[in-house]
Each structure stands twice: as structure tokens, then as C-alpha cells.
Amino acid sequence: MADPMRIRAKATDGVIDARVLMAHEMESGVRKDASGKLVPAWFIQDVDCQVNGKTVMSVQWGPAVSKNPFLQFKAKGKAGDKITVTWVDNKGDKRTDEATVA
Image (tube, rainbow, N blue to C red; front, side, top):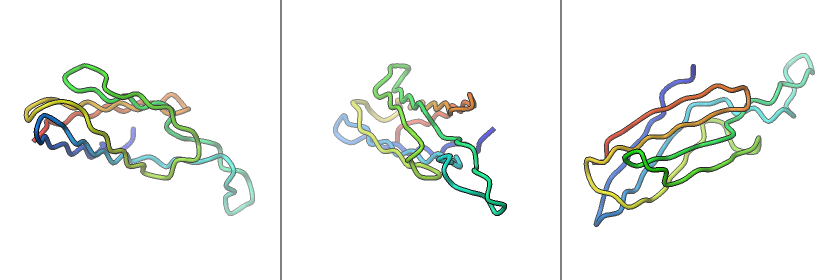
């Protein structure tokens, strides 16, 4: 299982500014290791962001996204709301983390 995501969210004037740092190797499938063999593709494919259980953003990524990706989004909300971020990679691994809006 991957390390926890670092989620920071702050509300100002009814708008949440959420920042998410995801720990993932994000291999593209075109890099070679020291012995010259291709490193298999391993990357986050789907990301779902929710505020209080309601999806506010869903994204699909490919192998071109960098290692330990950073995601920032804005949504309507207030302090005390719950942000939930879930990702699924191309190997079927899944991670979900939550944070409370400050």
C-alpha cells in the first residue's frame, strides 16, 4: 500500500482550495533499468475528489504524469467540510484519504 496522501484544504468566502500530494512511483513503461530491461508501466489512472460525499472532480491520468503527483482544485464549501480523495492505479491498487477543511 502506498504512503498516505497529504491533503490540505482551506475555505475562503465559500470556496475550498484543496491541495493533494500523492505518493506514487508513476512509471511510464518506457524507462529501462540498470540491466537494460523495460520497467513495467505503473501509474495512477483514476482520481476521484469528493466534498462531503459528493463528487466534485474525477480525472483520468496516463503514464505521462510525474512521480508523486500534485493536484490542486477548487470547490464550493466551508470550513469543517470533509474532503475525500481516492485514486486507482493500472495494477488495481487503490488509496483513499480524507481531510477536514480549515
